[in-house]
Length: 124
Image (cartoon, rainbow, N blue to C red; front, side, top):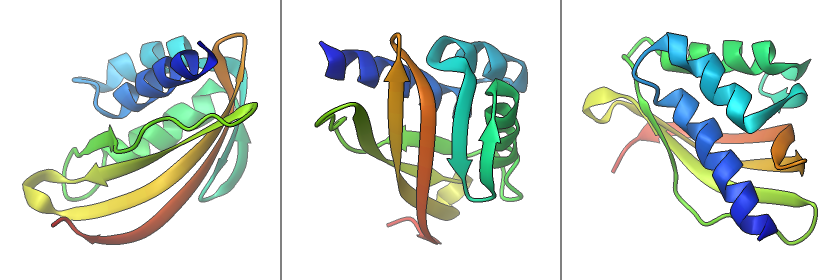
């Protein structure tokens, strides 16, 4: 049951990257994250949904165009933390970024996110 809850929160978080309009990003993040979420990303530690929203919107505004973020693994939840792999691809097979996120849940919502991004490379 805990792994299913984590997967649901993770998939809702990922859906914010793929929202049809920027205006939907905050709503989707609010369904997946606690208001005091701690985000450990490429630029360091940030707190709050607004910080995560800025990160998501920056990814969505990639110079090559709006891309697609997908979870490309199952959700592994060996203890309090869950991890999964993801891939972000820009339109027309443009630059691809792959990585692993580790998340912690509190009351069925993500309260901490750690992003480990890999190299950008062309999609296969």
